[in-house]
Image 1 (cartoon, rainbow, N blue to C red):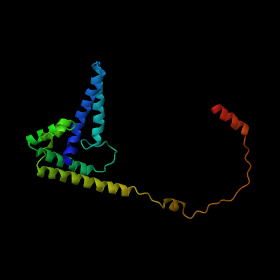
Image 2: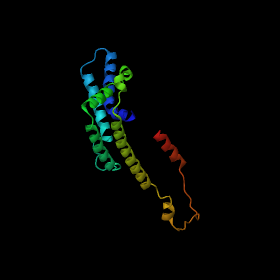
Image 3: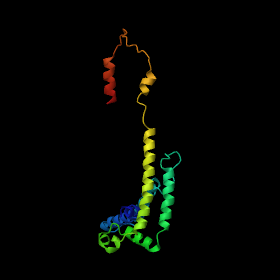
Image 4: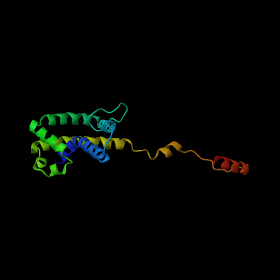
Length: 185
């Protein structure tokens, strides 16, 4: 059931945003037709800016390539798994995603239906493969970022530092310091 909730999260988030917008507009009374359009456009921009960081599109050039191969493999495996669903199973997943935040629907028998065990297992294998690849990439990245703690000693080497004191008189103009402090306040 955990894999179903991960799969349904994206679909359910759009529904919850639309529900929140309806509730906000319902309490305000009459609103201009421009306000709902602006709210919808803002939500759409927010969702579109969030999506590229997930797994649906490629990363921009110059960003980290960590998990790029695993991401591509996951996408292909996920598409193959999704195509293996029957139309009835797709409809069931869609209705469950639509009613994810509806309390009455969550108590119904339709929400408690689950995909066949073999499809849930195949999806969990796909997710497990993806998370294993991500963990391996993360470990490689962390190992690559370990700093050289002896770098300061290597750079300084055997240099001899001269801490001998020299005689020097420095005149301090306290009056100028006071005027500067007063002017900068």
